[in-house]
Length: 423
Image (cartoon, rainbow, N blue to C red):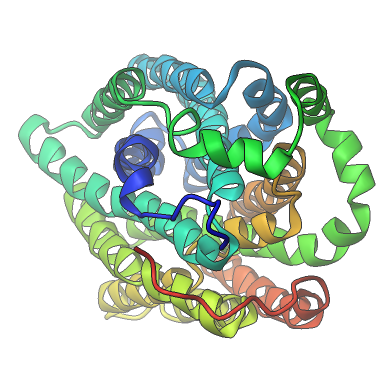
């Protein structure tokens, strides 16, 4: 870091960059455990409930298509405010839904909004955080999402106890979206304060060149995928499998609770406790990546996610299945926590730092493609056979993903410099 560069301080991104993310993720964490429960209460079978839950990730997948273009055109903060508004629309639809189809539409809109919100923060961190702090910064961003996923289910459990209705949890996310929008409007925009000097330094361009850069940022997602097809077809496959296992974990745990008869309140509490374990490890994952390399985080995480699914697959019909469910949920959270921020970090490593949005959009699309396919596969296998077999299939994909990562990650991501301490 040269003397002309502003010294990086964690507090410079804490409130304006991370607090809206915490609120949004708390709301999302509040609704994830109850989506299959809400669908089941509307008369959906276990497989259809899984399909409705999958629409959250499908929404994120399709939301990645315009999000890079949108952020480049209107800016990060307006895009996030718009995402919060779209999420509120989806939540209102979910609350008043008379059947699983209407509920699915609402969940899909929430997924669309989550894609824009997440990409906006990811692009900011990629552009303005120094390379030596990148993994820890992005792991912190991932940890912020995990903190929300930890807090949200406990709020849900309390709301269900007070109201007796699982659908009341959707209003938690409405409040969270409103709070995030208020913070985005009232606090300074980090891209105009902390990032302003860095933007000029990184780009090294005149205003006219900067406008040309914005035009390039708005390039189509599929063109970017084609231009980056070599890395996306190799390391991107590993990213897709990471996305698949992570989404499978989010989908299969509440479905498992429904299938073995765990109550709505206890489901939220168990998933909340697992979220606490996940959150507790977020900075550890970043430290591992910055100090020892990305592989030392990604590989154990994928192996652990695969093994955790196998544990579920072989314990569904045991008399102690609830205890095994709790243990597997915590084990999956440990594995996921060790990989905190890995997809964002790999995307940031591969992207052009002065113009990250196009590649990051393509990278997130690739990861979310796996994330969208996993719950559809779970729903299909559950309908055709059983939920236990679906868990076993996800376990196999976890081990395949570990092999892909072991082969291609060292080829595309060189070792990073040893990390200094942050100020």
